[in-house]
Image 1 (tube, rainbow, N blue to C red):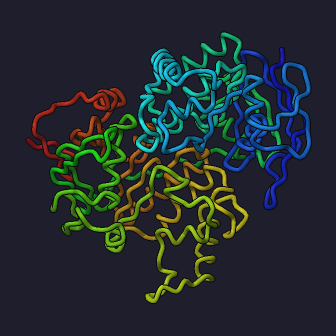
Image 2: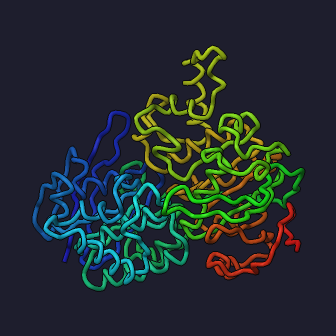
Image 3: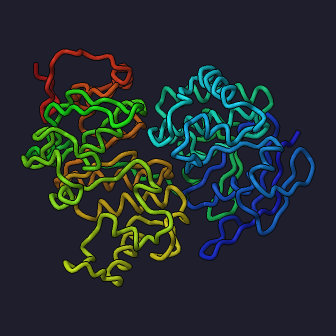
Length: 510
């Protein structure tokens, strides 16, 4: 039985035709992948199914009956649930209150809290229902979104990049959950740029390119290379990762300890490591183990560090402002795109001013022509699909906005680049482009600290690996000597807890 059938769905925006006569059908109990490069129209199509966007043309059939889905409330009443790529959570409310808003209001909040604990425990998606959302990392927010969708007992579950910020262990648990749901008859529409996931999980795959359906395949019979060719017309280029030639110490943390800023934060304890010029140091860890606090201390967002605990080129920056750190050559890409990396309601040109002030005179005058030229340059250099420098940040797909933000900081010519989740939600071609740009920056002598919850990515681009767990950092290990099993153990907090100090070359010294 067909659960969902789309016929001739089209949606035109001022600068782009997001969907062009798309037809797609999903059977009951089927896990159906929708694959396409950034800007191919996947998210728009999912929002149409969920009632968040109205199509210009086309027909939607639900269980064999033509329906008009006017809004998400109507979609939920039909049995459709969606986990968005860009989270739809209220920061000032708790996880439980956010979940409660999307459920039958006849259920008491105490009952919702109990159900969250039950479902999150059953599916291995740890969620603290009492925590305010603004205290959660992106990985923890992702789990809240997934649990909220599962609590509605959906007949169709739409997942837009659900594993982009989940650890490999959490992904494995999620796949078990999704297979259980499918076995019970739930249909699943699954969007991901991770081709291994699609081949391992999905029964069928529809490929979109430039808003049109370009292929329908059985992903279990495809290779990553063949799926990549269907999606972007080519295989992603292989990374040229030459051995690092580390130079002088650029960033050094000496016994950095910080009390948590809120009741749900993570205490940082005696963090001690160095990053040298011409190397990439990767930071692995389960979401919520101190990554946010570490990034805030290094970027200057949290200036509470003890004097001397953070140095840049030997200069104490522990309590320096973000502006001073940028002047010394530190640039930063936060994990949260909208609201941190970019202001949603501002244009791409205006968003360059968040960290690129060369277009502003000493008197404070903005050279608007230079701002536009810079945005144009970034759009072209990093192949960002957008309606030009005046396009609003919120109008871009997640992957294209990520390319713009990462490109903005790489193009600044940093001496130290700190990046959190560099390829979150980008397609295989764009991910290869970003990783290649990071390696090129390294080869030019830049020091890079990369935080990612994708172990495969860290192994691909890093020269040394650190692991953060419970606010502590394990001694670094050269990637050549690391294994997934070793890093996984350290992510659980299992390593020698004796007093160690990591040198810039990755050896543990007692």
